[in-house]
Image 1: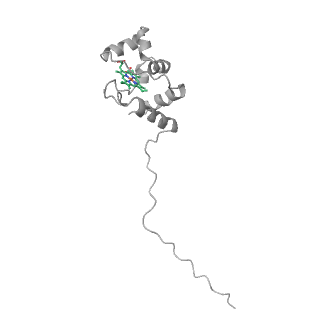
Image 2: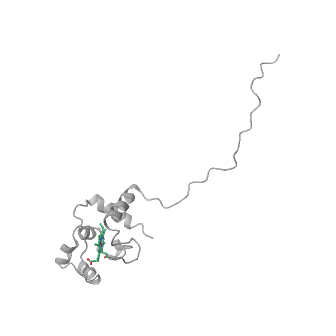
Image 3: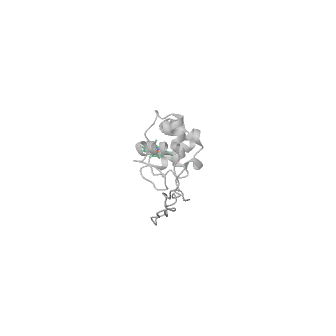
Length: 125
Ligand code: HEC
């Protein structure tokens, strides 16, 4: 005695021939770096590149290594003229090197903003 043979034997699964491509391994920016990127684009990009290229100001590639450090960078970005006026040796040197063009002050950027910004600048290859 046979049971109702309703189901046909396993229908071959249709293959479309296009395997799903592997996710490309591109250098993805973290959320913080994306935030830094938008801060950079909105505030700094008219005068700076994150490469070696000099625009109005120096290219910022490697800036964390050549300047006195993050605390210095934060002071500089918030108010570079104050550092120059105070006679900070590195500030005076970079100011003189760039024809004494004063950089804008960004007093409204928080510590977190500046960390994200510096992290983004650090992604430059
Ligand atoms: C109006 C143009 C201008 C804008 C906008 C500007 N900068 Fe600058 N920046 C300069 C110039 C010019 C210098 C060179 C020093 C000087 O002349 O004061 C400089 C120098 C610097 C330095 C020191 C670089 C080194 O080689 O030691 C850093 C760091 C820096 N800028 C970061 C920033 C960041 C971050 C922003 C955005 C939040 C920004 N700048 C926006 C013009 C600008």
